[in-house]
Length: 139
Image 1: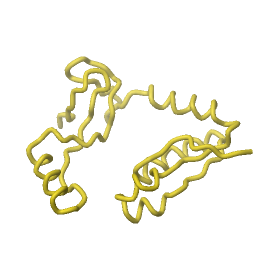
Image 2: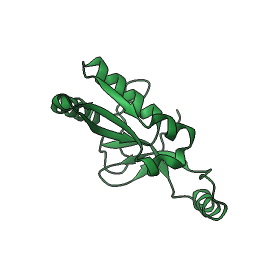
Image 3: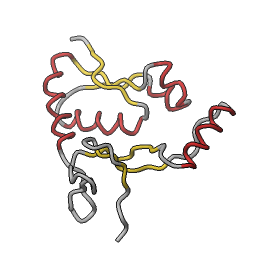
Image 4: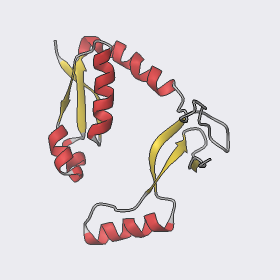
């Protein structure tokens, strides 16, 4: 029984969500380097991120679970599928940190000059088909 790195993360929340899903499906898994990345997020690249490790025998089952999760479209609170306004694709990424604004560019420059963590970035949806970034309109 050998452990293999199944997936890496840059934050503990995403790592725990997938860990809980895999454990609910009967797959034993462990998180490595979670504490060091949580204490200082800038160390994430240094240690290779938070590593989710599973038994090698569970690899195909875990891949099927992740594939199923990735193919499930995002929905709004009233169960409507979120689609790209440009190409109508449902293959989107939620929580994408956009750098396509003046505030984000100024924040990146200030972060580089002052050696601090970037302060400002918009969180948007990003279409994986056409690359369009969009926000949901409030009703």
